Amino acid sequence: MNGARLQHLLELHFDGGMAEAERQEMEGLLREHPEARTAYWKAAEWHALFRQWGEETTGRQAAEKMLQEVTVPAPPVARRSRKLTLLALATLGAVVAACLLLGPLWFAPPVATVVQESDAVWSPAGLVPEPGSAMKRGTLILEKGSAVVSLSQGASLVLEGPARIRIDRANRIELQEGRLRARVPTQAHGFTVITPHFTVVDLGTEFGCQVLPDGSGEVHVMEGSVEVRPRDAQFTPKTLNVHQALRIRPEGATAIASEPARFLGQEQFALERRTRQEAQFAAWRTASRELAANASTLLHLDFETGSDTRLMNRANPVHAGAEAIIQGCRWTQGRWTGKGGLEFSSPEDRLRITVNGTYPAMTLITWIKSADLASRQHLLAPSGDYRPGEMDWIINSDGTWGIGVHLSTAGDPARNWRVTLAPAGLTPGRWHMLSAVLDTPARKASLYLDGVLVTEGFLEGRTPLSLGSLVIGNSDRHRTLRPNFRGRMDELSAHSIALPAAEIRLLYEAGHP
Image (cartoon, rainbow, N blue to C red):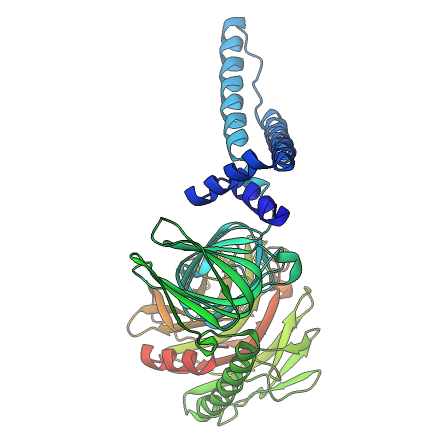
């Protein structure tokens, strides 16, 4: 009896993901081998204990929290007090019941990590963890590009878009569509890929697997061997060894020539990723020089030229206040290896620069990577003096962001603002390009996230716009009201015109990492 195979079947059984063929295989082992039955009862006991622990712990925590939050004032009439108490207990019971049902999901351990990605576009983007962060069970939809995904038991996958996979445990995935290449170390033997028409079980190997939109697919073995099993009865299970491949259709399976080069490996992924980033970095440098030379550019900090205390304004012609003063910020890596950026981590970290003049229209563009959005609101670039026409850039904890224009000095100067807010879209740990186009003659404010128009707002009044004494990252004036920005910045520009949408899109395409 194959003990590793039995353990794999038991895990499938208690996890609720067993196919009919696998169920029959397990039942045969249980009938024929006493040690298999012993292993089954031990697994059942552990499964019950973990489930009980999760339910009891979740229920206890929910009950304690509910008892702390539910307070019933003592009424003058005893009957009414009894009704309120019963209502509170009924509410508590409903919450506890829900917690018992959801407990196993809340306590599910992380099962995978998106290690690296190259030109990856995920859908929806907000549900995909940033590279390096652990994720629990769930579905990944890769629209384009590629990514390396590591499962917590050790299997490593190179996923090529477009692809859709569901990760439901530490050593098993569902490949619903797309192509992947799996490298499986010794500790992860038994790694399983489930597809609509077949299942691939690792026997100590590296292999490629592809699923087409109609559910048919292929398996190619680069090293070791795998077992390919039907989800239905269209073919008998087959063992594939190195340099062998199989094409599986609904009507059956056919041996084909192995083509390892069709599946992106980790070495090739790393090489292509480095090559793409180097080319993107070079393209950005060209676009950056053109942007700085534009006659409308008032401010262009490229984070390429500077010292520990100064950052050169590359705009041409150079305006008054040509250098930004660095206070506290630490130099770090920007969007690419070898590219500079500044890290803001404390209330004392900031950039100061003065941009003189007033303008009927302005465009502000920056690249940022937020460390977190824990506080209710962050000030990315607050205004200096509350003068009419000055602006505040704000970032909120829910991923929304916006820009406010100071309208007048009448009344409370801290309240006379017109704010245009973009919908949630910022993700901590990811580089984003934020662009704000303010056009007072058109009375319109347009906000772009990653080169895409996300909202338009009405811009009241015709007060000329200005930057004045710009403080980036934090301001003493606002410290008691809002926290400083925490994260990295790499490039900041300001323009005296309303840049068209097409140009903003081109700037994003040239600058995204």
